[in-house]
Image 1: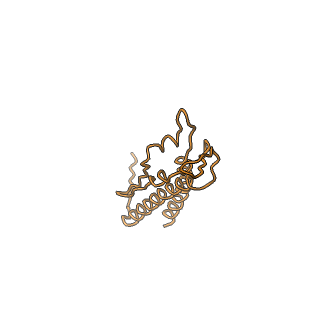
Image 2 (image 1 turned 135 degrees about the vertical axis):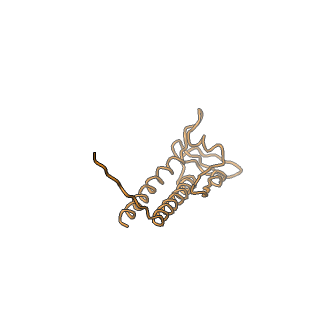
Image 3 (image 1 turned 90 degrees about the vertical axis):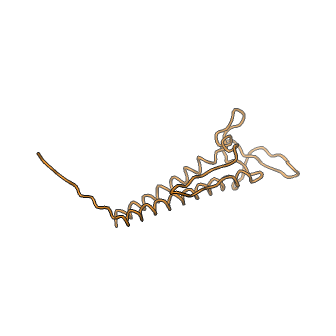
Length: 137
């Protein structure tokens, strides 16, 4: 019979620093995603229908474009809450889901998934950098 054993020692201070760094990256990713959502709504020209409301011209978004900003309510409703080692993004305007996925009468105006995909690439690169740092220290 062959017996073997492995003795694992964890540097608690180093491990806690790693966790703190990972949480910092996670919080920064949540902030970036919120910013990306807001930018997609507020910037870029929209190419949908034009109409007048309250004396000013508004151009709606075309299907596939991020929603056009009309009142700012959607942008203001996008928030990130950071606590207890979590970062939670919320959108309090219920119509956000209809814009993102569309309805039977309106094609999608996505702004959440594109922001997530953009942030995901950034997040992965940051975690790769952290893992390289861990392996070298």
